[in-house]
Image 1 (spheres, helix red, strand yellow):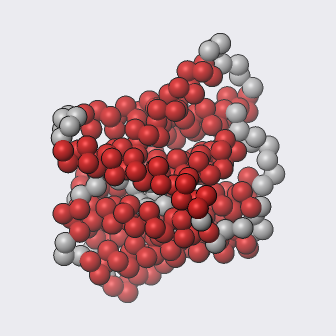
Image 2 (tube, rainbow, N blue to C red):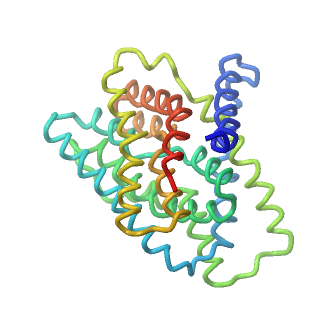
Length: 301
């Protein structure tokens, strides 16, 4: 536990720092949207490209890791559909609840995996992102649009334009084809990647909205319990079923233990979902993850 806390507390300190900076308005309100765009379109894609370009893609365990990630996601989605059928949630509410259970904070995830498992862990995490980001985005858009129908263009266009997915594909292409990057590119990508996660965590803290916690506490509580505790247990069971090695199991469980993504709020608002509920889920899950992540990780081999 002490080693885990030493690895994780600086990450949550950055999140708290981002929240305080925005609350005190030390950098100006206009700083945060620009910082988020810089990270989303340039710095974070550089990290993913850099991680995948040098990853050992011939690792024989990777197909099992991919199967485990998609199986866990499919089981969680089936549970959500059953809950919607039994409770009759409208799309606006179902979309927020689904994103609270399925989406994950990529900045916190990669920062935690990098701190705990180093470059080998980051390479596996980048592969997980390449699989899960498109799948989770498809399910999120469908959940928010279930009552009015949604076309293939609405579902697929955001994925095809997603810079994180494009960076993963480009990194894998460079890796598999053996293309040589221009001299100095490795250093440039390393510098961009190093700036991504600290800035991303500050932006996560800046996006927290504690005032949105009022009025929905029972719903927030059960959704947070499922995301932060039940989902990692599900991932652990799937990892055991498919006999994943220790590192791959740890990365899978950590991804399924992460709080939901702050970007879920933007998508929810764009598609007419319950923004109040989504903001509350993002805020409470992020705060509770400071305690749940070390607890979950202590159970890993």
